[in-house]
Image 1: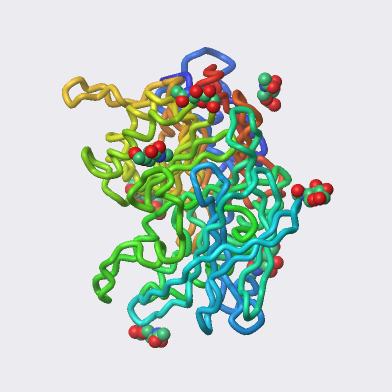
Image 2: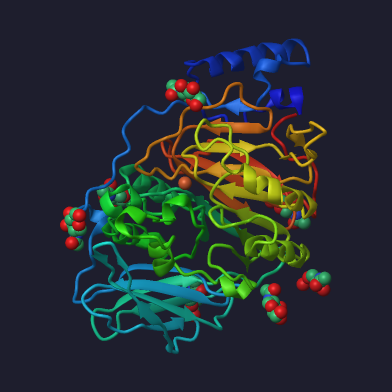
Length: 485
Ligand SMILES: *[C@@H]1O[C@H](CO)[C@@H](O)[C@H](O)[C@H]1NC(C)=O
Ligand SMILES: *[C@@H]1O[C@H](CO)[C@@H](O)[C@H](O)[C@H]1NC(C)=O
Ligand SMILES: *[C@@H]1O[C@H](CO)[C@@H](O)[C@H](O)[C@H]1NC(C)=O
Ligand SMILES: *[C@@H]1O[C@H](CO)[C@@H](O)[C@H](O)[C@H]1NC(C)=O
Ligand SMILES: *[C@@H]1O[C@H](CO)[C@@H](O)[C@H](O)[C@H]1NC(C)=O
Ligand SMILES: *[C@@H]1O[C@H](CO)[C@@H](O)[C@H](O)[C@H]1NC(C)=O
Ligand SMILES: *[C@@H]1O[C@H](CO)[C@@H](O)[C@H](O)[C@H]1NC(C)=O
Ligand SMILES: [Fe+2]
């Protein structure tokens, strides 16, 4: 890419004009060079580093008595209600909730807005222990054979305190179905997390399903991984996750591997609390799986499960990519926790081993976009690949590649660990835009060729886009959609 990346258009134009760092200086040089010549100084050949600098405030978890953690009233009332897709195509939903006093009923009563005839689905409950914590009764119930594009009401807590919710099923899988995905990663349960979720809920673009890039509760930052913080997190997100599916990815904060207190089974709290439909895509593990939803094919990968050659995840993905039929689902989206392209000085190159294994497939099968979390900031790449290297040829620099995905890091949900604000300098040419702010994003699929993507930093009004891009589908409309001229 070299000097190409220099000419980033300020698509992300809402940054306040504040000159405060060497980065801004670089921007000034860019402006001058733009006017004069068409070749930039090698030292600042990257995309845009936002000049927006967030006021440095400590990120603090909401206290246990916060309104968002309130236990719903009533004996044995269901709490932490959340839903996710329950099959391959969106005709099933997994409903999950927790009861505290006694198991109660695992039945979900549901009916569609159209028929009003009530139906019953029977689930199961489970409990687990973690050090000296004992969980409540965790219920999971899959509702099947739903109609597409229909509003359903559902009730849980039968026999004790009942609570009623609703959700919309997606339209049938098909190439030109518009659909809107929200994107949040590394959320946690701080005051900033609450702002991120509030902004997502109030975004007029209205995400219909949330893709979650891993690192949920951050309970593991508490003494003995205090699992009470898994419960508070479940209550916090209920106001969104009970009404629209959250599609789960496992992050490092889901590992809960703590041999010092005898907890040696990784992912114990996560797998007990969050079920995913992995068997529907012939996966053998809940950490990697795929779903189709409307016009999208979504592949969820596991940064913390083996992915080397011959491993179950490797073999699954090898068989998975050829199944993607872009005539049926034009948009191929991959989500994972640890990013492959990350120019922050946090988790630098942690995604490298997986990139080496899988990137050639991503280019071969023309993945449209990859969303990752882990780094607590925001970054969007140009379409680049780095697959030419073969140990001896020295070709180990990312190059512009129109068959490659755009890589977006969106680990900026707002957890208690705070912002990642230390960036590698100069900004590498593959990095189109980066900013150390909390926020969320929306991927708004219009049809088989166009999707509108926008990232919203928390400091602005709900509707303000700090970064945005028209995505052109790599299969149907593979023209250059980069923000560089
Ligand atoms: C619910 O049903 C009513 C009448 O049956 C219909 O007018 C309305 O559009 C439906 N709402 C949704 C969200 O499906
Ligand atoms: C678990 O142990 C910690 C200290 O080891 C203690 O502070 C806490 O109260 C205990 N929790 C329960 C539920 O027993
Ligand atoms: C969280 O956000 C909601 C919605 O904006 C608000 O009602 C609530 O008071 C907030 N809670 C905390 C603890 O910030
Ligand atoms: C899963 O495997 C079964 C048996 O090989 C096959 O019939 C089915 O089509 C596969 N499903 C998917 C989604 O690949
Ligand atoms: C791909 O999907 C289209 C539309 O559903 C269908 O007509 C076609 O047969 C599928 N192709 C393959 C190879 O399955
Ligand atoms: C930023 O990260 C670099 C590389 O890890 C380190 O050398 C430097 O001290 C850090 N800067 C600050 C301000 O923390
Ligand atoms: C697809 O959506 C884009 C953006 O809304 C629009 O410009 C284009 O005309 C649409 N294509 C078709 C075939 O409708
Ligand atoms: Fe992480």
